[in-house]
Length: 358
Ligand SMILES: Cc1cc2nc3c(=O)[nH]c(=O)nc-3n(C[C@H](O)[C@H](O)[C@H](O)COP(=O)(O)OP(=O)(O)OC[C@H]3O[C@@H](n4cnc5c(N)ncnc54)[C@H](O)[C@@H]3O)c2cc1C
Image 1 (cartoon, rainbow, N blue to C red):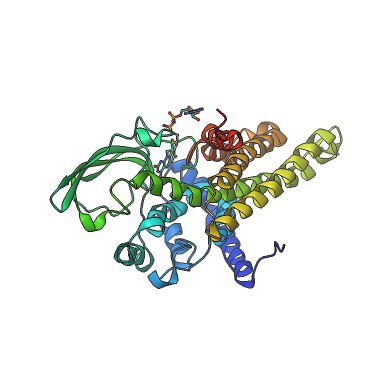
Image 2 (cartoon, rainbow, N blue to C red):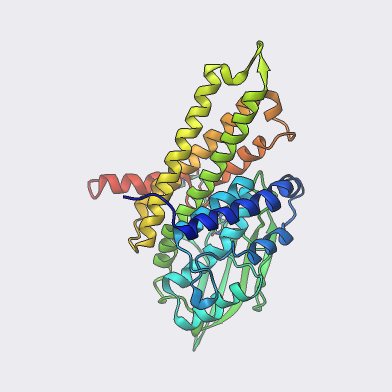
């Protein structure tokens, strides 16, 4: 068993780390404060091939693996998980085509994402159907060779920035969020949207399976995002603990602080290993919802804990915007909510543990 990276992966991590240091970290607080969309930064990420990592070379992409994408996402999330979410949503939107698209569909849509700086969105959740994906109310009806789509989607990342010129596709309200404010989240409304049968991804009754397979491939990314948040929480906390003095000594000398740092270090290592195992399984074509669920559930909860402890280590200063740890805490919360909440991951895991016994 060899956990080392290939030379290409080493280079990819170096590129993503350098990009994060130069382009993302200096601007992260600004985009968090304003809630503006960081288009220029993301354009440079696109130029640097840090977006659309998993699109095959045949369609102009990097041809990277799920693990490659996780490596990039950890680095970008170290700087700003909101910006990472904007970038990752492009991979999410592209994944159904990788799972079930025809050659023509892949050529048409995936090649556009690599030849033009464009965003796409994955529109699954609805106002009354988030966890309960099967409860969605959007409807497609057949009209000869065409389909007509009606419905309303909610919480759609990149919903307001996609280039959606098909008549009847509208962007609804933009959410004013607690964290990950550099990502754009809106309603997307479909009103009598005409679609040709050539636009059907998979089969008429196969959409739910495509959506689930998409999540199996994307959940390792959330765990990778969590790893980035935990590593940043640890680094900021370590540096502060060595500087800040109470009772005549750096707080790093208090065992209570040391133990919080040690817990962060353990959870970083564990999150990374779970992420890499889940990604490795995806890359072997062994789509196992359960490993992705372990990685997502553990990583999201660990990131929430690590970022909350980081605020604690900073004391009163941690509760202000003077330091980046309160942003880490607000950003981390989303990891427990989107792409299947922490509870839903446990439902999946418990079902797997219990099999058909209940
Ligand atoms: C910023 C942001 C970006 C997002 N981006 C996207 C996107 O790009 N595309 C997309 O399709 N969706 C996106 N989502 C939607 C996200 O996936 C949903 O919010 C999430 O799945 C939860 O659904 P819900 O909000 O309807 O909560 P609900 O499903 O109403 O859940 C409410 C609470 O009940 C719990 N719960 C529900 N069912 C069960 C159960 N069976 N057992 C135990 N507990 C349960 C949940 O864990 C949660 O705590 C995004 C959400 C946010 C906030």
